[in-house]
Image (cartoon, rainbow, N blue to C red):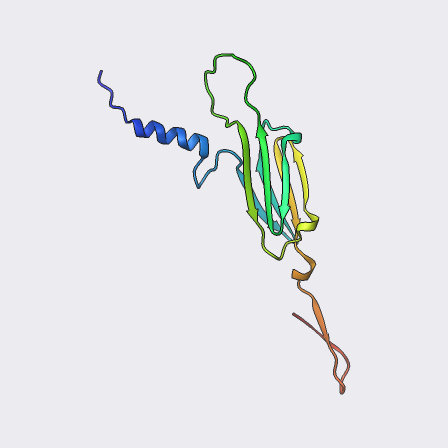
Length: 140
C-alpha cells in the first residue's frame, strides 16, 4: 500500500500543539466577561501547583505566569499532549478598571481574577442648583 506523506503537515500539527492557534491557545486558555461592576477572567491551568503561579500588575497590564514542570522519571513517553514548562499571558486592561483591588483565586485547576470597575468610571449623579428654584438632580 502506497501512503502519501506531507512533512509540513506534521510540522504544522506539532507547532499547533506547542504554541496553539489564535482561536485556541494551548498553554493557558482563558474566558473573560463582565458582570455588573466586576470583570471576571478565568485561566485553565490543570496540573499546575498554586505555588508556581505568579501574577504581576504594572500600570494597566496584568501578567500571569505559571509553570508545569517536566516529568522527572526516565520512563518511556508514549504520548505528550499536555504542554510543560513556563506559560505566560498578558492582559491589557482599560483605564476604567481598578488594578489596585484585583482579587485572585485558584481552585480545581482554574485561576480566577476579579477586577472591579474603578469608582471614577462608574456613573454618578450631579446636582444642579438654581437661584430661582429648588435643587434638581440629573444623571450624567
